[in-house]
Amino acid sequence: MNFQGEFTDLQNALIINPLVQTSSSKPKLNLQRLKSRKRKHVVTFDPQSRKDFITGFHKRKVERRKKAQVETKKRIRQIKSDRRKQRLDELEKQGIPIVETVINLKGSVTEGFEKIDETLTYVGNGMKSTVSVRNFKEEEEIDQLVKEKQQKNIEKDLEKKKEKEEEVKNRKKKEKEIRKKNKEEGEEEDKKKCPNKCEKEKKKKKYKKYKMQYSRNQAKKKRRKKKYFLKSNKQHLSKKKK
Image 1 (cartoon, one colour):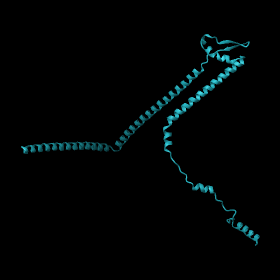
Image 2 (cartoon, rainbow, N blue to C red; image 1 turned 90 degrees about the vertical axis):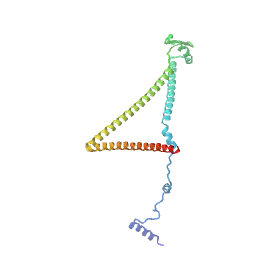
Image 3 (cartoon, one colour; image 1 turned 180 degrees about the vertical axis):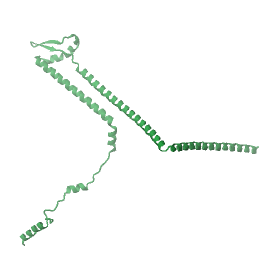
């Protein structure tokens, strides 16, 4: 076999006719794409989730408020703990050897605080030191601040609701006024365009009234005839019996 000749012939064919493809240059199929094409995508609708979303605005609002209250309480606790640590550090810097004894004296110092001086002397283990006494009512003040903020938020919500209601009322009033004006303007334009139209409408109304009266009068006449006929029959029958 002449392999060199065959190779040269194939090479020449590729040069002359580049559309000829070898076995190695065949396009490869992508199986993943074919599988994805065969798959059917289905979209489902859950009415319960839609209902929960539409009817759950108030519940979500209440949950947010509760979470905010819990977070504020946590922050307040952290602030309190930080302040206490700062006080202890200050007392230690002042040179007090035993800090726990001073902390235990808090309750006795706060009672009748108005009569006690602002500075007190402390003696322990042959050491003398001065302590500045203050009536810290942090918990009560913080609770009051939290309540005030909550009240302010509630008042703001009520004010917003009232403003929205007033806006809706004013908008409806304006819409009614605009409709009335449009009707009046339309009637005036119709009169200007065709003045005979109003006269025709008046005549139609009169004719309707006349027709209604005529039908009522006929009904009354029929009733009278029936009554008269019944009475005459009764009289005739009574005479025959006699």
